[in-house]
Image (cartoon, rainbow, N blue to C red; front, side):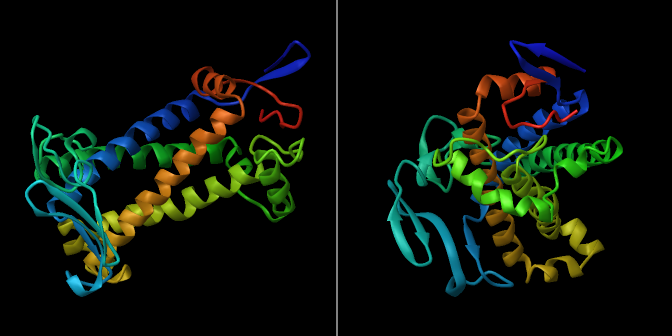
Length: 271
C-alpha cells in the first residue's frame, strides 16, 4: 500500500496491532513508574545487599527533621526540600515522603493500593509486549527490529547524523541502526530483567520460585535492579521522544495514529 505525495512516498508502516500495543505499552509504563514510586515510598531506600543493610546503602530519601527533605546517594547528602523527602502529601499538605503525591498512583500514601495498581498495569504491559512480539514474528516484521552484525558499521554514521555532524543518514530499512540497538536492548534485555526482578519482589512468587530472589542476589538487590532498570527504560523513552521530536514529530505521530508514514530520502519502505 504505497502512494505518491509530492514525489515522496507515503507507506502504511505500522499495523493496527502495532499501534494499539505501542500506546497501551506507553500508558502502562507511565502508570507502572508512578505506582512503583508509591511502593518505593513505603521503604525509601535501596541497598546493595541481600538484605536491608544501611552500611551498603546506595540511595535514601528522607526527612531528617520536619520541613527538611534530603536525598543521600552513596553517602553524599543533597537538600531536596519540596521535591523529595519533605514534599506534597497528595492531600494538599506537606509531609515526610520520598516522592511527591502529584507523581504517584494513588496520590495519597497507600502501599496496598500502589501494589494493586502496579500489578494491574504490569499485566497490561506484559500482554502488550508478548502480543507485539508474536505479531511481529508472524508478519516477519520483528527481524527488521533486531540489530544484526551488518548494521554495526552504520551505528557511528547514524550518531553523527543525529548530532548534525553528518548531512545525510546512512541508508537503512524501516528502522535505523540506533533504533535497532535500542529496541534490541529493551525487548530482549531490559524488559525480561525488569519483569523477573519485579517477580522476585513478590512474596507469592517467592513461595513458588524461592530461587528467583537469589538470582538477583537477594530481595534488596532485586529492588536495586528493578529501580535501576526503571531508570534505564525512562532514559530510553526520553531519548525516543527527543529523536521523534527532532526527526519529524508530526510524521511520526501520524504514523503511530493512522499507520501512514512519509519516507525520508534514506528510509526503507517498511512494507
